Length: 312
Ligand SMILES: Nc1nc2c(ncn2[C@@H]2O[C@H](COP(=O)(O)OP(=O)(O)OP(=O)(O)O)[C@@H](O)[C@H]2O)c(=O)[nH]1
Ligand SMILES: [Mg+2]
Image (tube, rainbow, N blue to C red; front, side, top):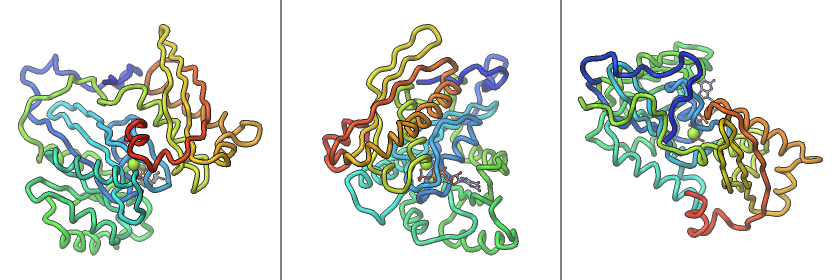
């Protein structure tokens, strides 16, 4: 469990000054096809960079819980991998399973769509929606719409696809309409006492988050092939005062990919490590010494045994 670092006034409000506990609390799954902005939306809702994002589909490979505690409600958001059916692989089967499992255990679903267009892949996700749970459609990336007059017919189109509780156009990147989205989610949450203390941010530990930040830089700094052949393991994480010493290994599937991750004179690896370290220091609230190795592990994504070992 990682708590929100104290970065001067950014702490979530506590309950100590309230006489009664907040009346609403529940799990909110964020689902949608790849690249619609689910993880960007989670981070925007939390005002924290917790879940990794990139312009490549299937960046997220795990369920990640992000907890937001406000005066009247505790939202336990669950970011999920993009649901996809185009590419079949062992890894994708596990990612889709994670989406299905998330849907089985939630109080509210936020279905993220791209406000610009609804495609067949969105309909496949909609087909998974449970009928007994409130589903709110968030039409994301409204900042990208050149002509906002498309929004009205788009909302009419989306209404036909499922009995949504609400439809909210948002921009996760610009942070617009998030208050309206949160208000709709809160209305659909059960009246329950909070499950987590007010300052808890996620159920994931620092080892997981450290590996994810490294994976994000690989997605952002490498081309279209290598990120999908890559996973990251944390060999050790030792805390000495406010310094964390982290040793990580990037696993690639083929020898040639190792050189691509390292880059000429190791320069790409240097950029990956230094950007990942900056994210870790921000989230963990202390200094990080990061050492990253690259190893070839053929077919890591194709055997159930190694997928389980790498946390999928
Ligand atoms: N312009 C704009 N871009 C956005 C917005 N939200 C997300 N993006 C971009 O869309 C891309 C995908 O965002 P992610 O948050 O990684 O998408 P995701 O749905 O989590 O993707 P997967 O985890 O791969 O399924 C990134 O390049 C984001 O910066 C938005 O509101 N406006
Ligand atoms: Mg994601």
